[in-house]
Image (cartoon, rainbow, N blue to C red):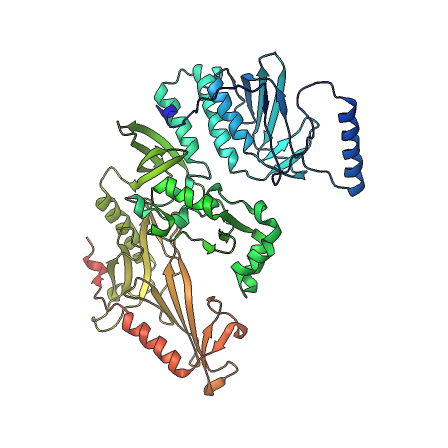
Length: 540
């Protein structure tokens, strides 16, 4: 059962007072209780003093220490509003204490006026003496009794809390589960499905991998995996941006507009080790993050889109060693995910697309469809067009190259590159070969593009597959330009583009020597694959 996956620690309450301390930057100062109780004159005077100070600075201070409960909680009444109206009443002391411990890890940030239409979690605690206390979390903010909202500085901590509250719902909601008379395994699937869909783990389901060594980490961290803690580094944020963006004005504009994901080094290393069993220094695939030893942090641009995956769990089987074999659908395609519980983490073993027809047959059918579509609107005469297979991203699936038929002495011009990603047919939309815009495959699995823009201008662009999620794409890694119309004219037409953006203006182009240009060009030519394509008419 899934409940074995959530390790509920036995906590014995020996203290008379249980305190839920939600603090900012480790500070501690009382801002009120949720219980109704009398207040001593000194406390009242202290409160007034704080109110005066707040008005004088015209800033409303965030609660630095919130919710001091007298007594031991024995019952939790939990409501999840605006999400099917789920309700549960839990009297499991161990589960309640686990939720309390998780709440202690929350940190409250600045006041916010932002309301949300998303769900609200309302937790009503009942204590041994019959007194009550309430906690309300609206999406990613804290709501106090007087209806004031404060940002939660570590929203990733909410995942753990809401996973525990999902368990409360699954075990104690009389309407959502018991009225439907769900079987135990269906409850297990529901809870596990929500856990895998969380920011913490969803990145593992965006790419295929056959072993922990093959985990595609840049996909895992695409949305930060809920690990980032920008608030912790706000005092040195400008310095971090300077270090991360360097001299690039474009990068700085992106960092200022969308922000940076800043992850504590120890937190990230613990996450990688916990989810894969591998030390960061030994991972096979790059993390997709830049490391700065000065602060011991890992940094990336914050993603401006969602890393969402439409998954539906079908079945879960757990062996005697705790290995879970999970059959699920990803956007309608069947997958098998293997993992096991590893302390506070899920350790991922493999995630593989497994069509019922057999992988090779399914891929062949998809490529047959791609060729048929290409023939309807070819970029080059069909009689001079062939196909070629080659794996350029190391995922074990050969990409389908539709390219010019050559005699084997010259590299063919590539017209289209198709692939199968996460069980779906896709294509590298950057690749559209023509007479004046030619693409060539290199022996290091990169792509060179040569653009003829009149007799006096030629661009040479070097591309690399940096696909994320299910969409294949290429990233520009180098650009050289031959342009007699630039400042150097015919006397010095050789340039290197400094920001790796094709077609940029002259201000981003540095002069290089003719020798440097020729060496780069010769290196490109020597690396090109001189393949002999099979005519499209021979496709079966």
